[in-house]
Length: 182
Image (cartoon, rainbow, N blue to C red; front, side):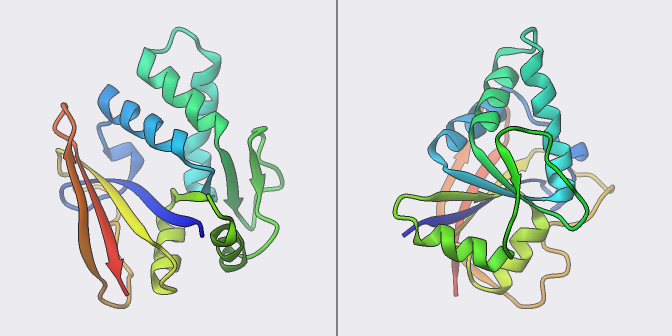
């Protein structure tokens, strides 16, 4: 049975805007190692369009080592994109979803060794409401930002989590891995 793990960056105050975070080489190395274990990552359109940045980094061999290594890793993993507006992904390892989010998740969960990452807030909120996420992994950046939206804003029901892991990266980022108790 496959596992569904939501992987999201946020600031101390809960802001999830990618443009408001401070990833460093340790964060990139952590995520590169994490993604190497995965089979698929699911994105909504907005987050996917931000992730296209890494496709360009891959073309630039002069990028710093950890950024380039992360770009190689994110390129290698299969990406499924949920969008009502995109006509194509323009990335050889990405495809538009051909079924609903729920159908896709159920099919992926049936795969024996599937390790599926959720990389978008919108998908995370939908799947939490449906009790289909096995784990949430937050990388908390050591900063606050008054700009942007809060990660769990709009969640309708209280969800209790059990701690699985806390890891502090050398740059001060904290990875908090939580298991939802449904």
